[in-house]
Length: 344
Image 1 (cartoon, rainbow, N blue to C red):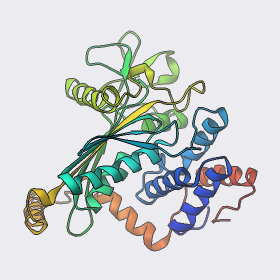
Image 2: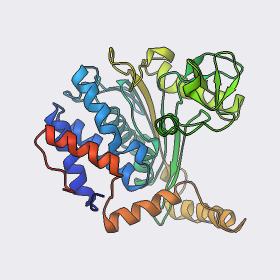
Image 3: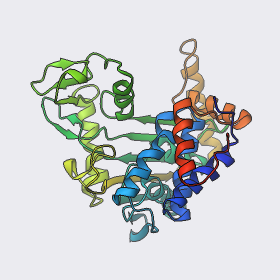
């Protein structure tokens, strides 16, 4: 097992690895910040295990983090970012930064992103807003894997939706969910490990429920909650795909299966300045009153994000420990780039 690594050392390592493969510093650093944060909060499926696929896409020329994303102003509160085919992490991070800046000026900031790629965990971006004493929203469309309610063929992605709100103690509310029955990374993990999918998560081409995707040639995920999940997923596609000018439906490429074109994912980031509604002391008093009522409703009730913050505090105090197979793969990639992993 690799030894624990200080988060900053791990960020420097991942940044250097991407720079060694042609990424500019800003793009590489954004990707590294995101991946290491995911490791720190216990979301390993969005962490360093993604390094290998990104390098493969860079080598194929369908991920191009050699340029800076560009910002276009639409109105005092609205902007669009062209990710220029680079890391979705970088484009979305810049988008939330810009949304926060716009919200400081006008009370609300909305930034759409086009020409981007996989953007990771939406919680990362809404946490940026919460840390700035704002309410944040983050959405992204993705390659179709999910049927419409009542449909048989995948037409929408897992289309994640995230919401964040600040708390006085820094343990910010973080809601981050796929709009499908399972997140794409969860499905991939089940397939890699040969674990059957839960009942009611997927169907075959004839609409029959399945749990073993290895036994059928065509399968698709269901939206969570039937028509409810379908409606939320459609909202994400409208905001992140349609109005941003990004790919829509099968116009978005698979990060793992399509090496002929860029992802063309779209993202939608929004920040609301709470101070425009009320002073922050009043906001915190009102929110903590709600939190107290929620906590009193039953033993062991947790707010969305609380478990993540426990992982984060542990990682901050004692370092990040990578999963064995992730560390081994990263070490091999580092050796090819003549870099030494910080846990070696």
